Length: 292
Image (cartoon, rainbow, N blue to C red; front, side, top):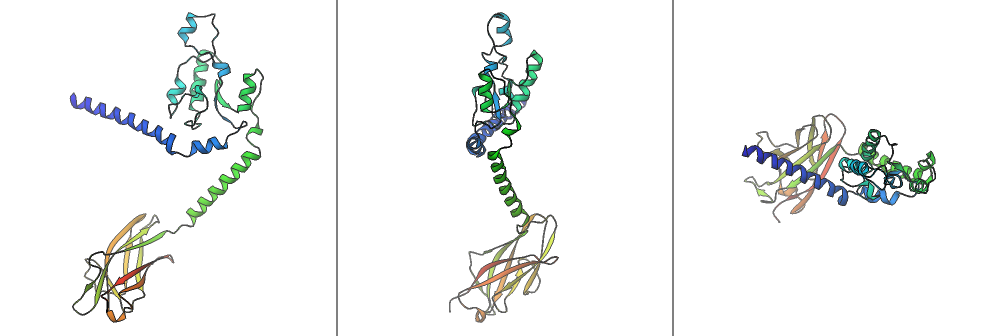
């Protein structure tokens, strides 16, 4: 029983904390509220509480006790607050936390149906429409509030941004290569006089299929390499298989004759090529050797 109670308390605490963090992230970290506020004007459709119709609000019990009092349509059920992902009260006016999900509209319309009142106590409306209706005039939003120079410019800018993102996704490289030199030791002198360096090679395969690559190096005459733990004879190239949508990391050793090195830090290039296609990736690295 104690264990069950503990689990229940921890679960409830987790949900409360998760909800609190969600609201704080949406309020303080998400850029959309700031962007939305900067783009709105008096002709923009937003979620609006029509307080000229809903106030003064009163619960059903208060209405029954005071049948002659002047009451608005809002029965103060707080359902609009309960369904709001941000926990904000639309009846307090426009708020930065509002993400215009319109859940409060649906909830309020359901309540209005049950109590026999007209819908759209909370509705999509423009500031101009709200002010006109509050003054007693009957005004409805037309298509001109949606299609006008301001919205066309915004739509064009967002379309350009979306197309740029789509282009970058379609043209991105599907193959990546990264090479890390061993820090200690920087090099090892072999018994036959050769010099060996160790590297960690990382191949990033961004395609949803397994691919085989050939790794080669250029810039050091006669240099040969071998994979760590392999019994194969060192050669000028290696055949590597990388899983789909994954990074494949492995250790290699490169051996070179000091006579073929131009300096204590000789630059060279590693290249991987897809054996089943024409895609390649390069990485410029350094081969370390004893100073002459």
